[in-house]
Length: 415
Length: 93
Ligand SMILES: Cc1ncc(COP(=O)(O)O)c(C=O)c1O
Ligand SMILES: [Zn+2]
Image (cartoon, rainbow over all chains, first blue to last red; front, side, top):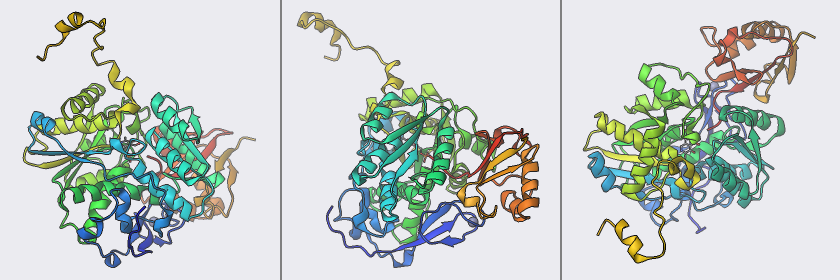
């Protein structure tokens, strides 16, 4: 990685999201006083950045180093993730009737989902905290992201997944060489066991006891969108939601750009997209609740979003309300149709989480919740090669022919 | 013995004087919290419950691996031999 001139040590510490008590940036994730979650804060006044600061740097998410919770660039475990394309949509935008639609294509990250962002930060921080083993609880994508970074870092890795994940996700993750623990139960069971393991065995579990650092990686989804739009914010973003951590971090990202003077007053609307069958945040939003009621048996084709007890659910809900967005769900059929629509119009092959984003985008435009003149960014967070079985059934079979031009001719219709 | 076993995670251990596993008699989760409060101090009640006497939103209590929010919350009944765990709600994903 190219040398970048940075001021070190701008990470201020950890602060309780509930009672604001502050802690030093060590291996802790809950407030001792009230058990609220801890977030990283920075000395924003000391961070002197301008658009020109970033322009000459590597096209990876590490270009925003000043706003990531690491004390040294040399700790970075780098898979060259991030700075993924902000793809200006033509044909999908036209189909939906939108004037300015962008797709943030995180399906092309090194392990093929946005999870390389939080995993990269979490594993790098684990090295700084001198942890001897790491792990994660995963709905599928974090498994590969964590295992790949553990491989680069040379750390033992324990991955907790529920039974029944898509085979390509398991095969990919296994290939990086972690110990994978398949928990007989759903994601929430795997997550609980991982939390107990983090507590009992002193493992750095990215989305549990390393969570304050881990979630910081997803802020770069906001940083990049702002930079790629010429340091402007979009009018509206659509974010697929499982635990709500990514949506919360995207908001924190925009908020921090404001704090360091790179954006004006925040006016982007933030909307949450979930799969029907596991949509507790949508449910709370639509019913006007101030709590997120967990889903006992999640049932959606979007397995990566199938989190029935979303840790950041209430916090994500509050952000959606604060930033004047909506929460909407998509059925399995709408998700599959949306995956196909995205591929057919934009050449982007996504997994169901991306299908949920696009399906909800379409629904919100149809319902008038997104204006035709709004500058919209839709987050496409994972790759379709991870879940081929989801679309395969709905697709036409290939035409089978003998290698003979005459046999072929009747099939060629687009002449 | 007809007792319930509470597994105390590290983040709660100071509340329970450093103990990591506590055996006690309790017929339901509310009852368990009260018994713990008697044994370890009012702090227990104050830290685990919110102003309205409900389990704090930032905590999850599991009985044999089942989140009590699915089974009646603090009224979830406990039987001898049940394993109870308390974990921070903000985890995972
Ligand atoms: C591809 C993809 N998109 C979105 C999400 C949702 O992220 P979060 O759980 O932070 O809400 C996940 C979670 O695993 C995912 O794998
Ligand atoms: Zn606190």
